[in-house]
Length: 255
Image (cartoon, rainbow, N blue to C red; front, side, top):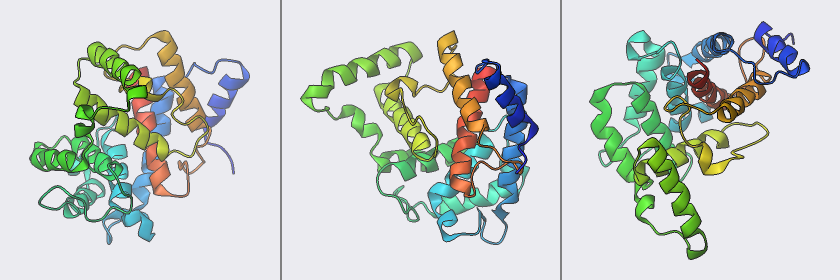
């Protein structure tokens, strides 16, 4: 299959030894291509992306919504049913107590994706349900739970360092760490979370050092090499959405 032009451009950069020469405008074109493919997967009958039963999982739907709403083009519910209907689907899977009804995965990560998707819509009407989901997830409470004695001191030192640098609370950091781990867990790509908690900060929320920027660019290049001619990164919408989410953050760092 023939590669899209921006992937060939990335290959040229790699061959020339300029791995970290990716420009925001090129990344935006790749994002547009990937977003168009995702929107084409929207099933107006089922109100989700994709045709399989796994695509009805609330996590998959939430990841797709976040990938679209965090895109540089600022897709919102008013953009069309490919946003508004999946958001309604997500809300239908949340109980009055904030607990999720339609998640195949156990633990806090389904809550992470649902909360992040609703936050990404920038719709204040969801603030109350977001708070209920956060409480139901148990993630924030981890900040008040002592770690094992052998890890506690080093772990707390890292959290304090990041909290002081970026002005966020320890509870907020726990949430950010969970978001980061959840994202990489969905990305079938070599490298994983390599840097651990040091990479949890949204690169668009603070000025990056040159070294940090190079790491962001290098990761984006690795992802772009996987993009196909039709704009997809994977046959399944869930990992495709994970790649878009990561590239959205890279774009914020590079623009």
